Length: 126
Image 1 (cartoon, one colour):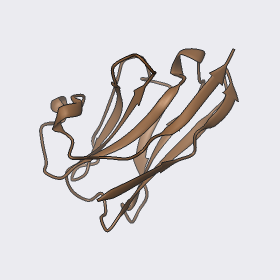
Image 2 (tube, rainbow, N blue to C red; image 1 turned 30 degrees about the vertical axis):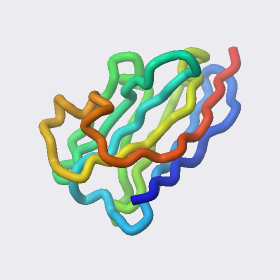
Image 3 (cartoon, helix red, strand yellow; image 1 turned 90 degrees about the horizontal axis):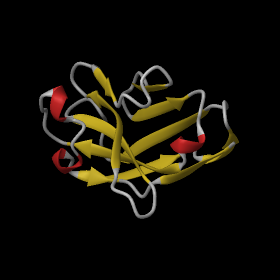
């Protein structure tokens, strides 16, 4: 499975961006899809995830109310809508896929995922 994340860029604080994640040869009807982010020198941190079967979503507290994870009707692309961006949101954002279903409370853990994309850079200026 190859994942392609796109949509990053340079924006100002308060602006919005929408990231996209597409998988070659796979839809997102099963398992789960997550978004993580990483700043150089820091650990990768969880942002949001969506359960492939139910569509249920989970968010990190620091993005709750500002970010929204969704998927298209064909379940072939997952989006991360990011609103009211802050400088502390600056990071490389990665989408990741888990093949098998798991309890949603585990989706914040990077180790439960099976495939990772290359990331897209988001830079928010103050």
